[in-house]
Amino acid sequence: MNKFSLILLITGLLLTACRHKEKKTGTQDRIKPQEKAEVKIEKFLHFPLNIYHIEKDTVQKNETLAKILNSHHISSQEIYRITQEIDSLFDPKKIRAGKIYYMVYPKNSQDTTGKPEAFVYQETAADYTVIYLHDKRDEILEKISKPVIEKKKEISVPIENSLFYDLQIRNISPVLALKLSDIYAWTVDFFHLQPRDKFKAIYFDRYVDTTYLGVGDIKAAVFYHYGDTIYAFRYEFDTLNGRYDYFDEKGKTLRKQFLKSPIKFGRITSRYSLRRYVRLYGRIKPHFGTDFAAPVGTPIYSTADGVVEKVGYTRGNGNYVKIRHNATYSTQYLHMRNFAKGIRPGVRVRQGQVIGYVGMTGFTTGPHVCYRFWKNGKQVDPFKQKLPEAKSLDSTLLENYFRYIEPLKKQLDSLP
Ligand SMILES: [Zn+2]
Image (cartoon, rainbow, N blue to C red; front, side):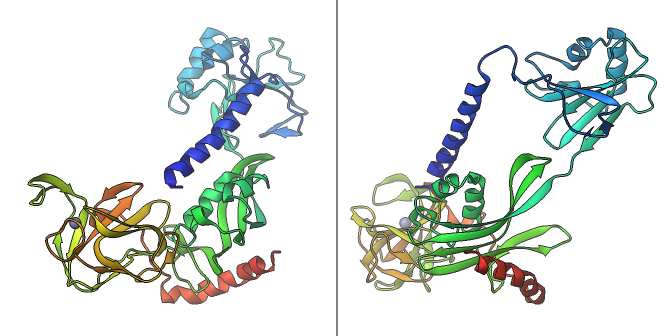
């Protein structure tokens, strides 16, 4: 499975969720069936409910601020004044069908017109805009954000099916799987998880009041993969700019950089080019690889950790090996004389491991290795890629780092 199928899978999951929601609502004129419910809490934002009566409603299709206010006994002149006053503070066009709003009515008011005192638009579960409708008030508009509460969670999940499925049956958001696959993109092969693999994580769930917003940051995790124990701790190494990354228990980065060349010595004789004259074909043919010339028998290294995807022979490529490094990147090595011992599909290789030897098999005029770099299934120029930065922690930060991760590591280790 590649990144595309991953995206498809997630889209699929989301679509199922959406379809489910749609079924519940149906195709009535009203967007939600349960509106106009009275809010039953002591206080709504800063409106105490012993003084105010709050009506909750949903913006309908083609409903504008003016329409909503008009239907709540606010005259056209008043609406005009209000829209003038809020002009630079709130754009009424921001009001969208399906969004929730509230009408705030004073209880026991001498005002018998039944006019609301404020209109409250809920932009997100956390963000509200209060528009005061009376001209007697100094205040015209107020933006209120409810605090987002982060609740720490701990999980320990043995991989039995797939990461997504194993999370799904535990009612954990697939976003956590995405975040894990990002942290471990270079160290865990998510498409070949083993039955004995498992992971533990300490992460945050985000809430506003009781509304679940989703998975927040993963604070620490450990993955048991192919017998390896791989820790990951989120650490802010640049507090000034809020830059952070994930590091292992030694302060080493979890990202890997590609080797610049698949052979130790040798020179580039031809670069990646979409317009290159190839004598063999007698016509312009793009060259998707970078050629490194070297004597026959020179060892060829895998430029990064990965899993051997293909070992084969074609008339053009000769003997070749293709290695998948993660969901995004693969590399391919052509014209080999022969393969290194044990190199076959499914085998894990380390960065710098010998996978074969320079040869002249396939269409080639001299001994060289044609190095091909695949990104999301397309051949690209490895020298023009913005590859992930792979920096370990600066030694001056290590002492602090170790002190920071010690309790986290203990906590992870003690999870069942
Ligand atoms: Zn080539």
